[in-house]
Length: 349
Ligand code: ASP
Image (cartoon, rainbow, N blue to C red):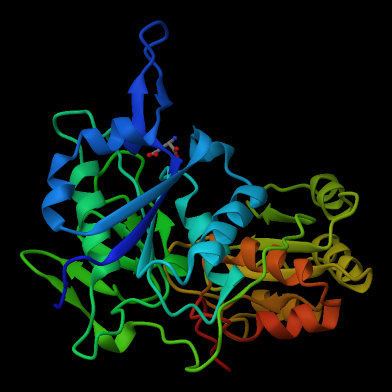
């Protein structure tokens, strides 16, 4: 790994546990400012990088994150794109995978690293995981290959001992330091004694294209999660949510759902009303194979689009993004069938 010194990095601090301190009155953790955070990691200076920072005012718990915040982060990267070699976004873990997915869609032709990290324990705690995550994220953002180009040229999550593609990541533990996994795409790097990048899995945008930042998101989308016992009226109510344009249908196993008319007919009617329904599995690993069972076939016949192996986080943010670009229903469906930036493996089976 080549990590020359004096690389210029911009840290965008949004909040999250990493920078939190305990409120003495309530004992609840609440976000605190960046100077507190960086004062707790004097080792950062040993890296020898030129690090600037900007922070959300005030920093937030990521449960409060919304598309306007994603847009603010993307705008900060756009404004400072030429000035820095890489970007590190400090973020709460709760919605980190949504932000990573949203940013991956917003930042077209990205050729520099955008590394998102945070921690399970505040940086001021003795056993914090924040110190290591922050330092490694900075090192990953500064890493260059033999030609001097950034090793990572995409939005990625650095957590614990792995670097993951942002739009393939999911938070899978509320307690463990190993909080994120990418079940359907290999790690981009393993963090051990060394940072071992796995070149063959790193995303590369088309060369020679300038960064294009598209920050518009349309939030007229929702999840509809299936469970045995869901009633006709619950289903109907959700499918008639006022103003809804896109639904991520969280199905069983390889994309299966009830085949009975009380279920399939309202779904078909929703599609006929122009709602885009995207089939995404509830399972953490694997994806939709709508030809495997009759229960998946019925959804396809009703006009439901396969989400293949996309994560639920990437699915909902991709729908927001596509509608946000002003695409019509047909164009949105077409874009769901292609990988925009490595978020999905489209299998024609
Ligand atoms: N609630 C926190 C947040 O997402 C949790 C964390 O950062 O780990 O901001």
